[in-house]
Length: 369
Image 1 (cartoon, rainbow, N blue to C red):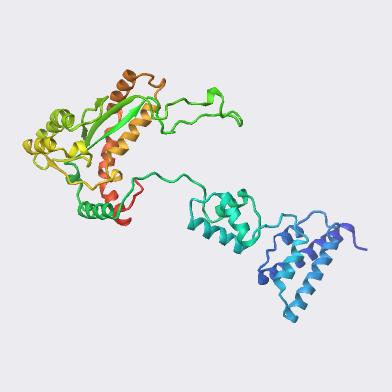
Image 2 (image 1 turned 90 degrees about the horizontal axis):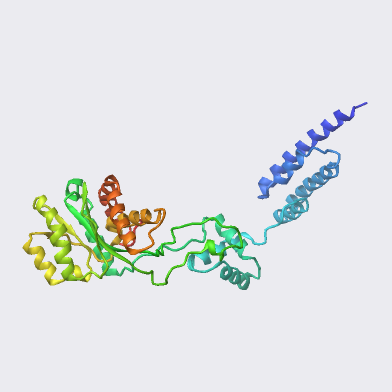
């Protein structure tokens, strides 16, 4: 007489063999055998005796379907779902592809818009969460678009030509270029860089809000210049930059000193802002023998000092306590400008060959910098 433990062992071995056979069948028909594997390893063997018999029936059913030439995939899929504990998918693979193609054609469509389009096209109604999951399976996620300056075909052509001209410059050549620009810093920054810890439902509590004016509030206009191994003093003013201020303050007090300390290979880079291209500025540059570097319009990604302004803004935002008035903001700007490590500025300048190559690769369009 066979003992109960031996009978249970024989049943387990028998179920393992049936599961292996059905796995082979489902591989040939394109159906997953996940539930069969779980069934074969179920601890309670007596409960699954009937299921083993059903597996045998499915095996014979597959043999008849293969002999009769029927569509065995759909029938076996139906039989397989009868014993599945997971929720069936609402969408078919074709509907998933429809969502992907529609999202790629119009990337500004919301998940609700895609759900409505799918419902009108196929009659299948899904939630916006389902749309997000389906798109996430192919690597599409909802993200904020990057803000960039508008570029025309002429801008792209000039940017591409400039990058090709300077792509092979050596670090020695870039060391003679001074990059300069202006930026504005306000007491009430709108960078949205600051994060807070809050509980759900407390978004509009007083301790979780930051009050700021829509126009940004009062602040300072700053100018600075960077060069390999050094930098200018930070110029801070409260008024708008004009051609006269640019000539009398920026060129006379800052740029001219660096030109005198360097040889004739010194190049001064500034963008195409209107005060920079005034006639009195051009006359001053000629009289001081300062060579201006040709610069393509709408190219902030090629100017390394934009990253320096970002470093300065992060340092100001991290100060504790933060500046609360204009004099405190002015002192903070001057202090943090001097505290920026020079090696970080040098690394930005030495990245110019990579920036040029990135601009060439994008045919003069926007770059990741």
